[in-house]
Length: 191
Image (cartoon, rainbow, N blue to C red):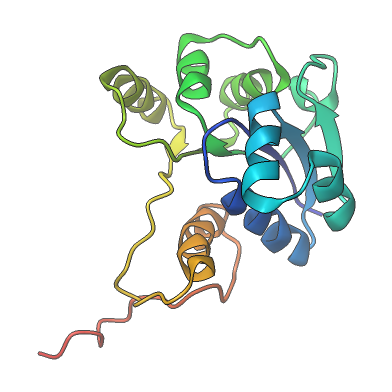
């Protein structure tokens, strides 16, 4: 069974994380969930759910973001991927600076040192120059920077379709076959 660490931090966009967790659980991935204090606030504001309720709903394991002795903090704990969705600018800055002061940042640095897949999904806008520089640095180290910037060429009519657009890109990065959304096939524009 494949497994991943999914962390939710303080940027707006908790709906992306909830949909991602559902999609991963649907394909039988085991999820270890971390939610920062600010992430919990956004999860409640945007989705009407607590971290505990989210974990129970999808049968995932919830870890306290302050527990640096938890499983995701160790390189000896094998994960197929680490995804921070959404990723706040503060979290991006800490990871780029090598600061592991909580379980979210520690697990990201574990992913980097073990050369495992790390996907950051920034949602804040506009980006400060320092965040752009940090993302460029992280990208040069092999981190996947996947901004929550949905496309519109598929003519979405609901918020869920916009959320699915981004989640589908995350699943693509994980090499997970899915039927979320519609793929571009070249026939959308008449010649």
